[in-house]
Amino acid sequence: MAETAPADRACFLLRVRPELMGEYVERHRAVWPEMLKALEETGWRNYSLFLGEDGLLVGYVECDDFLAVQERMNAHPINERWQTEMAPFFTADASTPLSGLLRLREVFNLEDQLARL
Image (cartoon, rainbow, N blue to C red):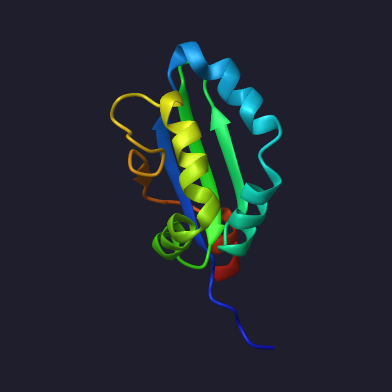
């Protein structure tokens, strides 16, 4: 059986404006079907967002290459519309959600270390 390359696991941070957190959550309860399909088509897998009480938004995604999936998403026709809709939810340091994200470095993964045992 051929080994597959491990997925690129990306964790990133953004900041949602505290006064808009409720609406942000509501918008994500029913993301546009065409946006969901675009994420899938461009390679986003196991994608989750977590929102803290202070507006800290933590994103997690698995993909083949994080920079490549961002580029494919940026080129997708639905993305500009979604980014325009979402931009007001984020603090001033993010003109668009993806432009303001801070990617975190992974320093531990249980499955990776178990696989090395």
